[in-house]
Image (cartoon, rainbow over all chains, first blue to last red; front, side):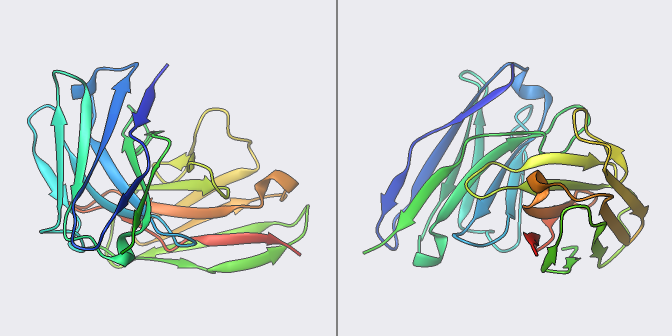
Length: 118
Length: 107
């Protein structure tokens, strides 16, 4: 069974950095891209970027370019998303999601709530 | 980046209604389009991939069509469990994009 298990909720002050983890099991980590998706309270899904765990190559959405870093650790089958210079608008649930053989974003983590508040 | 314009943003419908949701891409994306369903507090659920292929286990009342720049998700006969928000996702380009979502509410 494929599982993506994310780290727990975070509370951060404006200007800080948050790093969320996503540990996978049930498939070969390097076989599929890992994505991160933001969902602010009451808002839609926003694609942030992806990492190819095979070689570490990344692609970021323009909106997050310069503030987001997505990495993959193949020794622990864990992906990470780091978001810096946090502001109140970054308060959101962040999901990791892996592609499957047929479906983009076929498998999802449970989500991690990040609250940015002074 | 490719923009995805989803419409309507919200709609009210009754059980048994036929529902159609549209996504338009700002440039051609072939059939690199998927549809997801999300209920409040839940993780998005996959419905349709490659624009028209039904994910295993998804009821046949859901269907997708389209290619290029215009795509539709159709629910042939709305059921109580279908009240949710639906999102399209394009994955043709270097940078992927979701539509803004369509909330389907009970009339």
